[in-house]
Image 1: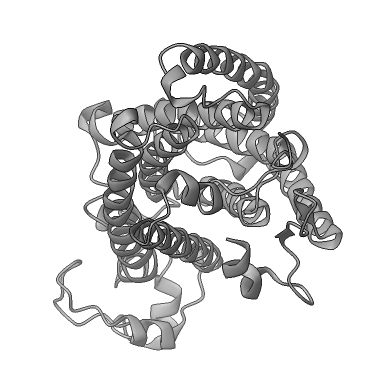
Image 2: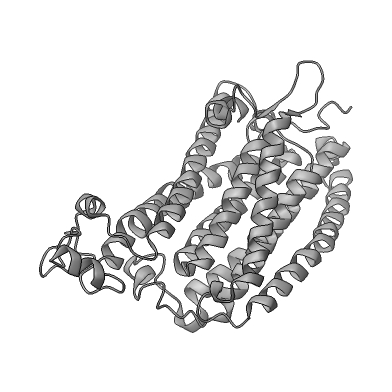
Length: 399
């Protein structure tokens, strides 16, 4: 991960994470670490300050006032720390017992403290990804008869986000929980958890995610936001299971081929969710193409002023008589017109961040295929996984 990301994350040289030869310890460039930590602090302060200082910052339909949302987010963040500790404690003891008994024939795979700690950390990730996937699936497919936010991009922007009233309490609960989870996850990544070779990339990922949640909720882009996090959380479950199976050395016939099975599942699930649904349905249709087609259409909310100035409602890539979603919309003509209206900055900010996540998806998927290629050449998936999707840690020097 470090070698692939150096061109992207370097600040005057490769300023990510490195493991000096012979030390067995991950070393993080102080400037990069300090910069990322400063950005994290600014994000958290901004989120809480907006809730207190801007009464209209919450989207229509939110059952809480700004101060109530501030208190709820703060309490949820504080409550998550003991919950994380409890989940990790239970998982650590359960996996240690399993390792000493049922998996004794594999050599007690989590006997080392470093492996046990990695397994405990991953158990928390599996817990939150499973719980949030269940809540997101409830919103998209069950609550109120379900929604078409994932398969019809017009529903994301009709009516205009400034006119949408999302009265489902489950949607606002989801955003509250997700924001708290990512703030705590980022703090834990920085101050509590063992450092891996992909420390910098994961730090950037967490910062981008927090910014996306704040922007999508503040601009009332909760429909597309819910679809985005459903694709991410659901596809993360298989990678969590893959890592845990790898820590437990459940490879080959003696391990029930669980590493191989979860690895194949990860390749398939990620290809469908993160490299097809996400870039096509979300990034392209939902953000760059769909939002411009729907929200800047003739007669759309906020477009009257631009239409009057331009002299025609058909100056933004829309043809007379065309219908939304019929494929006739000309995005490039729309971009050349560049209408200035209230939510235009939100489109570019969210679109850029969502595209940045897509770049990370491609990099991670390339690493998975490189791992498969190395296994074909003779290296086991367990050994290769320690380099690729696990990374080294601060404790890799431990016997």
